[in-house]
Image (tube, rainbow, N blue to C red):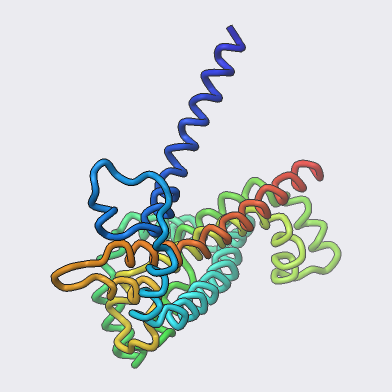
Length: 273
């Protein structure tokens, strides 16, 4: 009976794995095909021989590497700022008491319930007032902290950072920032690994805000540059899919690195405990 349940569980896990991986496999297959192959029925399920040709046409149609560097800069800057400010605020909410703490946290949670689209017009007006329209500052500064990251770190720190350890640090003469930097951050590494991946991928894939705020082609991010591959009357989908594949590969590499780091940090924490 137990063996049957184990087989059923493994079959379910394998089926979920196949369903999860298939879109990436399909993306890779279609990037090696022509647009005519994409429309063919039954669909082509194996690799073709047009990958190099599709990539060459992408590179000749848009400034891919320029957009790649722009996106990498914006995503890295936003991620580092989010990790610092969200971990600082989350740690404070979790382990310190101050006037209005509960009400401020409720307001923070309430902001998570509002659709992001509601803030587009006010955000654009603010960026225009500052003279930041068309600059990277308009992409980085508004995204340097977010409610989800603060909530995530607060929940993790509440359970993982012992109050006794903080009290011991205070006895040794540690101030607030030293407690945060030397005591809390090493314990928060698994949570920070997840938040880093979540933030980086979100900024990397962001399309709407860069589309609104950027007006200089030399500063376009990857999503904006790739959208220009769509023609007015016809679209070469093989080229578009090849460009999408080129934009996804860095995210896959990042995910593999972050997931490995996340698992190692969790394992280290389990051993220490």
